[in-house]
Length: 405
Image (cartoon, rainbow, N blue to C red; front, side, top):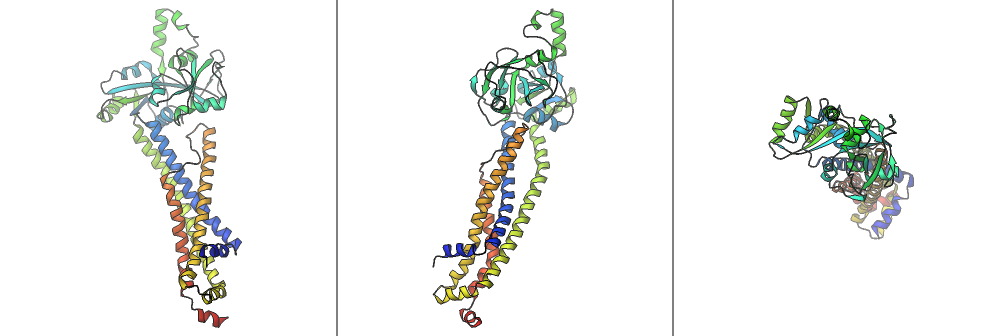
């Protein structure tokens, strides 16, 4: 007797009950797998985008808002800070590097970031086409921006005021595309990078080269009023993590936000939602286990004649009990495969939705070691549900079965 093929036939002899049990198991496993996939990708994205950034310095306000705006570009910044104060940070003995960022405009919903060449270098970005900017009003597109907008090298475009699109368009100050970054799976993919001077020129209404034609007094007055949105700072000593933020917050009009601390808070808040989803998955698995138990227990009662015939044909009690366990095993394997596929599909759908809003990227077909627990959970639930019916089938006495017939 082939236990596996016979159990497969028995399983689908009750298609409606099997489909219901399979649906319940799949939903529970899919919800758990989706949480694991999303959580793993979000944590990796945070780690990747935060790598090498020790502190973010910007206008006073919400530290978390400053991190989300300056590192992940998922929020609006609290304000601007004077350029002179940011430049002074570079002379601090505990600072190894300062990368200024100027925000305020966007194109097709993608943010235009005025910065220095240190910013793409920080993430190890490489060029797929063209070169980095070498003069004001030249722009380099992230991989996602280039794909979404279709802007080729040499094409001119204008930015609009605001970080979400739809604002006043700076039609008289166009940018020229000089490069496209290769995909880096980091925040640069959804940004348009340019020189900080470009952002100043746009908002000061100065054409390229016009600044140099002004008098020395006018140039100095303009320089004194120039601002940047924030600065990404890298320390040169671990002790700076204690002293530098305190120095910024106590002695300047700026604030220093530590990314590690703020993201830990954010993940703690997000963790409540993930625990709710995981709890829902556990409830669904418990309901599925109860449903599988009832179905297999009913199957034992319905198959009393079949069990008696199998015993008369020489099947030992162990194989009779194994039939029930194999049915549960088939359910677990099918539910695991369907649950993982459903979770990957849902991840791809959510990732596409987030990508449309230039949010944090999540993709489908992401496999992490944590997903190995999904089939283990399915197998455990199915075997526990099948244990009592299998023992009952194992203990059935063939003589009493024949007498009842």
